Length: 328
Ligand code: G3H
Ligand code: 13P
Ligand code: NA
Ligand code: ZN
Image (tube, rainbow, N blue to C red):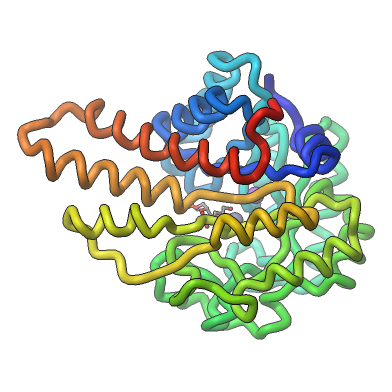
């Protein structure tokens, strides 16, 4: 059944677990997530970005998620809009049937320029007002995602490029977070602790100076009843990087957020953990390996079935590590 985010996150808080929120763009990702959830009996959050809507088309994306609900009626599913850049975007998603939206007012509507506190409160409060009127949950963000190593607002190509942020913007301030929750009434709060989107998060296995798990504890101490959200939470599996590079890829050395650090965050109020890159890496590795070792094969179902398996294994591992297995 389609459920609101608030329902699932309240349950997760009550029972002390976390939920991976996987990005979806296509059928194979959707199948992998649902088959994994079905296997381990986990509730599901699937989220679609603006890029996903552009790629698949809003109606296809909507029906992909609704198809998952139809095929797996016993699994609670949240249909979440990831990183809305304006109240208008969020409103359209609600009209499309999303049960949860993120208003990312940490950035201006270009999705790149850091915004000030008053702008963030204004757009987020607006979305909370109309979303709550129709039973839809809202995620807000305070602080800007980006690398504490380079000061770059994270970009997906590993080059950074969208300008630099100062240290205070890259780490959510607990007092400001508390004020923001009070001023907006959000159901869930995304925080900045040094992670960034994409595969190029850290140039070395992260330590506390570049991945600030301790900051989560300070925010949770100040906001014990707020559901915290970690973005940029792919772990960037080294085994998949090796497979990609073995079969023709060229991905430079890079590191993600270790699963055990996320688990530490879950002990301190993190309830939603956004993961996109890990499924992309597994999918690409599976395709590269299959095509390199089956040179006469040309049926896309053959290599796409390999991507489903690869992504499903990652989903299962995250459901189990975060404690959401067995909670559906
Ligand atoms: O927010 C970042 C997600 O990984 C979505 O990425 O905008 O390329 O779909 P995308
Ligand atoms: P990753 O790029 O680490 O998978 O993060 C995804 C994300 O935060 C989507 O909002
Ligand atoms: Na989100
Ligand atoms: Zn994100």
